[in-house]
Length: 380
Image 1 (cartoon, rainbow, N blue to C red):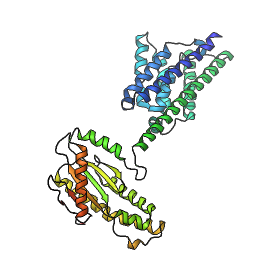
Image 2 (image 1 turned 135 degrees about the vertical axis):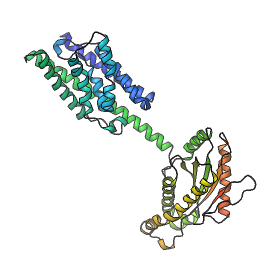
Image 3 (image 1 turned 180 degrees about the horizontal axis):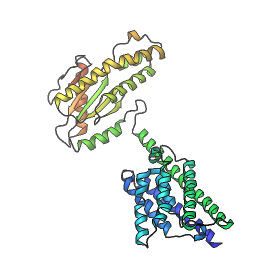
Image 4 (image 1 turned 45 degrees about the vertical axis):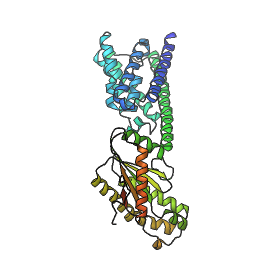
């Protein structure tokens, strides 16, 4: 009877190892090294299970297959196969194992579980379905039993049937617990990421907020030169007073969307506050920045008005034909060297922005050392 309690101890050990692996995944941030970390942790768990063999009467040598099932479900076939290397090497150097046993006890669960892998399982966006784990265990037991009949010419009797059903029930319990642990931790991890995103995001425009922008800009400026754009929506107060705060919010969202879509892949835009936005550009060449600023002004002037006409007409019962064109003014400052003062760049860009405002709006101005002068004008 004692032999029947040993698998329960092994399942408890397996759950403990899974808990440790999950905590390492979240606390040590192993995601960037998943292709190495998951096979290593899975392989070690397999070896621990191999060190606790089960009585032959139960039909299964040990529970080494369970970590491989989880690797296949959560990470897919390539990582599941890589997870085989460590336990296979241990088995070989510990005394060797017939190829059929290797195929039956390790390769089969890795491949079968991978059949039910969803790439969203890896990121934790979608929880692993219990049905996928149960189907994997069912297929594994079918393969295992058939292989046992083929290799050992076993005869079916009541004791053998009872032992197989007992192990099947334990394995189902183990996989269900492992999947639930994985899903619960993934849910917690996703919640933390959402909270971090919300903390770094402006609630209205969904752009980055100023705090996250400052951190990124300082880190970038420490390594290389950058340009800072201060961007302001022209005549925003009049628009807000005429059509209401809801329309003003829509305008902020629309201009933020246009800026986000117009900037380069390596650049970063955030809401500075009120109707102002701030942009960090990796471009520092004045001719390139000239074209870049002109593009931003043209994009907003040509698209924001048409996008908001329908919103104002339908949503706020305003006369869309009377809305003047939506435009922006820009001030630009360029770092002289890596490690320059970010606050000074922002102040310079802000002063250049005021020069654009004084110069007639719907234009951009470069900061020049002394004095500040109206620079490049957008002719749109």
